[in-house]
Length: 426
Picture 1 (tube, rainbow, N blue to C red):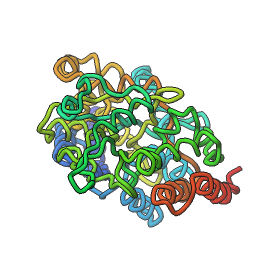
Picture 2: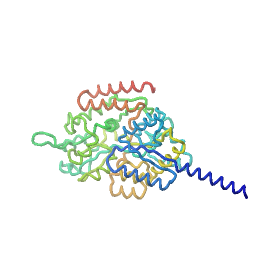
Picture 3: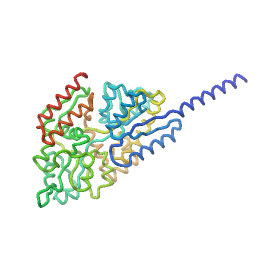
Picture 4: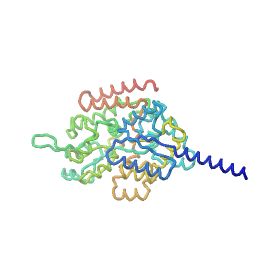
């Protein structure tokens, strides 16, 4: 009897210790706030809902600013020995995070048949920036493609079919010429098209290079092709929209103010992330359309946006808790609701089969455009030493758009700098 009592007490003690340890599992979670809208409230709500279902785990969201701010803060914290347990960072930061030995592969947590089915559920296009070297390093969360938004009222006023967006580069120029307006003094009051060139110029540019059937880098992330003819042609086309055709604002166009220019009818068509879809739906006081980007040699867009990563210096218990949270927040129902609430693409096909998403798409077909474009999508520019390589390209693009360099010279200079940076990764 005494032995049985001792066994019972020791078992109870073990449970209490395990319970206490579990109760202490806190996941610090860096999240970038880079796109407008009440995103922090949504994330806080997810954290609270997860904690209710998993009382042994506490999720602590830390809003870290832009994507650029967040990667800097995450790597600084990693080097100091106190990184976040998980973080949503640009999918293109994958090579940088691996080179810094900051993250662990997700594959190590995938053990059950259910786990394997979950990992296989994401759209293949989104996994292009999530895997390398046969390992999965990131899990798609707030992912996007670039889409074309157009003002249907301005199309009608210009004598264009409001339900037919431009399908090719040539059509986009022709439409934009009809949509560009000037006042009596000759000053442009409404531009036909706007492609932002601050913030993420390389990403918008990759829409053009993809449509011109040109790749910017290899899968291993140690080669770039900035000086190839198709790339030079693409940047020349972008510059010509302003300099030759007069249908696009001159110089550098701000990423953040482009949606506002669209709302204020300063521009009739804009290229931006599908992550702005809910913002446009809420704030456009006119009927608008959303379409895949216009094609040249082919259709296409790079994917974009953020992935979840799990940091190496967190404890095994924290890593397991983070994995549980990531699986939970990317379930079909939550992926669908996240897409509806934000405009990002629901990252898995079965999310579009949920009743809530089916109802939403039936009433708002624009929500399916970015998903449909995934079949034509390519990986977003991502290399080793990614921030400096991307900066070399961004500097070249902005030099062309401001007229300080020719397209050929700017891309050759960007290629030379990128090759110098990538030499050690060959």
